[in-house]
Image (cartoon, rainbow, N blue to C red):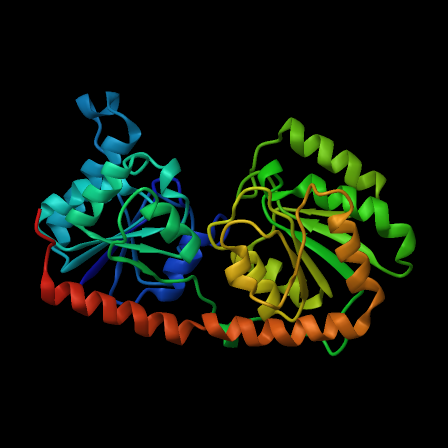
Length: 361
């Protein structure tokens, strides 16, 4: 089966700028899959065969970016003639491409009610009538079906290749780690505040932060980032800046505790899954899809509830038995998201769509 996967226009399919969508596509792609995206520098991620689309010039240059990208994708569809198209995170693009006469999967990684082409219930209903919809968490499925009757929306969670993770050291460092975009939605400032409050009660422990405003080395400076870094330096936190995904996983393998203090309702929470699989005890926000990812394995704490993050941090720092219990539960929870199971589910969904063809419009 010839499958064409279409990335969001701004999603980099390269090791030095890969976000969660690109990493998932790379893990799941079969060798013969075609992955469409915008031009990158250097080598692409290993999954599938990457094809950089060329957006039209001429009169088309005055059109919206999304329209030019759609036209470029349609050109590649006519050129490669796939049996199935998978569109990640772009409802309007997926609906437009469903007119090409090829079955289309829309795979949602973020809240559809914040997306062009899916904000209104009638738009989401129309999507289900034109194509097959998948979400990476049950929380996202509920958001898609809000104000609608139950519909054929399939949950297909993110996954990890547990065998490819960096080896864990024999003894974990007394390290508390934040890894994520340095933005308010991710709670970077809440992490700094909590560590500043407890660091004097945690002798021998230290904290570090990995991340920038974007998933790339040339990420822009922001006033928020300046404020957070000033406070982090005052609290003695090591600032590592943006790191490639492999380096983040290596840091998680060393860390005893990983904190995911998101204010934004995480649609899934890949960082928490990676931390559990890497053998870290996890503190996570109880928002969005994070609770279903961590299950009973993590301590839950709202980032802005007075003393909540601080209490959770001290509980894990002071109680080695509790840390060990969270680590063991985390291993068991992470195995539910193993790559092999996800690949099998994806193959089954693809084969079913290839047999049934387009949904009647």
